[in-house]
Every structure is written in C-alpha cells, then in structure tokens.
Image 1 (cartoon, rainbow, N blue to C red):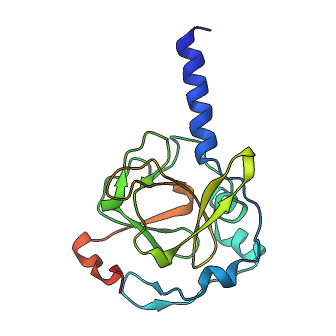
Image 2 (tube, rainbow, N blue to C red):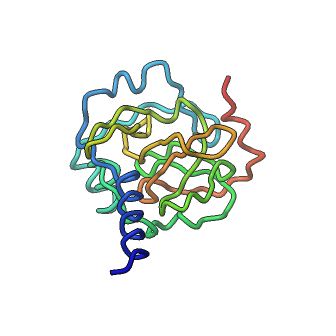
Image 3 (tube, helix red, strand yellow):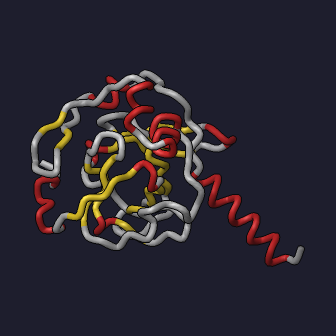
Length: 187
C-alpha cells in the first residue's frame, strides 16, 4: 500500500469518527430539552413536544431512520439522499417534522454528510455533550422529539464558524421559498 492509500484511509477514518453517532437510548433529558422552548410549524403554528414508545417509532420509521434517530446510529458517508440536494427549502426532522435547517445555511463540507452552519431556530435543536468513542463532541438532537441528528463542530464557515454534521436519514426536506421563512426569525 502506498502512502497515498494510507493517508486516504486515515482521513476516511477521521471523517467517519468525527460524524459517527454513538449515544444510545433516552437519557431522561426530555424535560430539560423542551423547557422554555417554542416549536414552530412551517405555517407558524406552535407545536407540542412528541413522545412515542420505541415500538411506535419502529413502526413509523424506516430501519435506517430508526437506527439513526432513536438509537443514535450513523449512515455511511457519501450515501445519504440529501447530501447533494441543492433545492431551496427546509430540512425537517424525519421523526416529527420539525423544521431544523434551511437550504441557505447548507454548505459542502466534504465530510460525506449534509452540513449546515446554523439551525433554523435555536429552540429547534438540542445540543448535549457526547463522550463516546474516546472523544468529547457535541451531539445534536431534535428538541421536539429527541431524535438524534448528528454532531456540531467548530470548524464551519462564516458567519457562525459551526458545522452541523447531520445524517440524511434523520432529515426530511420540504421545498419552500426561502423568503417565506420569516416565521422562524427569533423573537
């Protein structure tokens, strides 16, 4: 194996570990997750927190979406349906439909997963410390249903410097004219 192959393998492993999700189960943080948060639908209506049994989630989600959203798994890099999506609109939680990111905050990170520099609303994402895999990262969850989305890193572009590295399997997409997103502007 030549040096190029070795370096490529090491880089691929690093990218996988930097976006791999390994948190398991519900840590009982649902009360803290929803405290003082307002969830808005695409129409501007207020939404309630979503709680379902494991069995219900398993019936409603595809096997991959269940593994990612409810068991904190990860999809293989460069395989997600929304990685190359260039349409204008809103990326929603595949579990509950809550708007999480817009196409205007999406950027090409080269990691193999959809990446965004900011969420649509701070209230719509929950960030918590993830100490799995021998490193400390910040896990990103849907604040409405607790579905695992991915991780956020401090190596993104301006204006935030953040990279929300998100699994396609944890997302849905709704085509929406970005000009109609004023409903999500923080109050």
